[in-house]
Length: 442
Image (cartoon, rainbow, N blue to C red):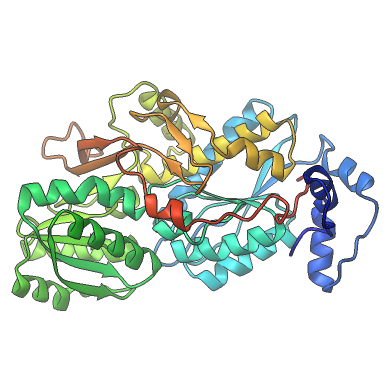
């Protein structure tokens, strides 16, 4: 839905004023198919800013489907950030509340969930995703209403490229970032003949495309690509094809429960060391508790609880205090992304001094987050062109000398945001204008 009328020849300030309608008016218009405006804006604005009205966040994470485990970890990160904010007295004197609806790892459900959270639950912000297809569906609904949406954990390059939106901010590294960190090192170490193993949906395809381009850049060769349907549990045919092809390296873009099954079967066949494996990204919920021989290969991540950096130990302690009964005894990258996204949204509201969505978007765009605050090696920045967080990317492998049962990773390398920047996303992203994005106070 577009903002209310913007006259040709009006100044930018007049256009923004004309486009500022209450979200309740937008919802009424959406429901009735008319540009109706129920009640004066002055009345709606006063109601929206009342300190006894909570700030409501809609959580759009999976509780079922391929990424249910990651969805649960994502939610825990968001809820810890919300709890900490409420313990400090809320944001702008207002309590933070959240509503969660399962997006089921399906785009169609993601669209319905976003619509319900906005139009029926009156949520002024949406947070959460692991599947890039689901994230894209949610963001299209969010943009129609002008509702800020934080994509916490999906990493298709298209999320900050051709599918970017003014209201959407992408918090994870993407497939290109991880591939840039991994491909050249793999060629130098193992050779240049690659076989691609690709989940057959948007994240897998976009990640494989980015990997293929980098392989060609560094004079490697893609021998073949095997597509893996979502929900695959028997990888025997794919693994037989890999044995017959005999590549130097398998570059896998397989996630969620599919990856758990893949790792178990590769280990059973003793294929974890030859050929070499690079997994574009490794989410902590996908491997936590697996035996050491299942953690073969080199994989990317944005954070690890074993990083020797200030604040990490305290962060882990807060996690364990809040979630004493959670099977994952330490936080991983998915939890970290959910927490950091939520914390930075609430910080942006504080900096804006307002819950006006346009003001908050402008606070997020270009915002620099110090390495110390993010417990990474480099300062991070929210790219004002793509709305993706540019951050440190780590390569890791199995830790053969763990200090305890949780110490599963060994960090091998770290790459700065500049070294892994996705230039294609910068070219492909065309954000909507502020004037074409509905504005309201949550």
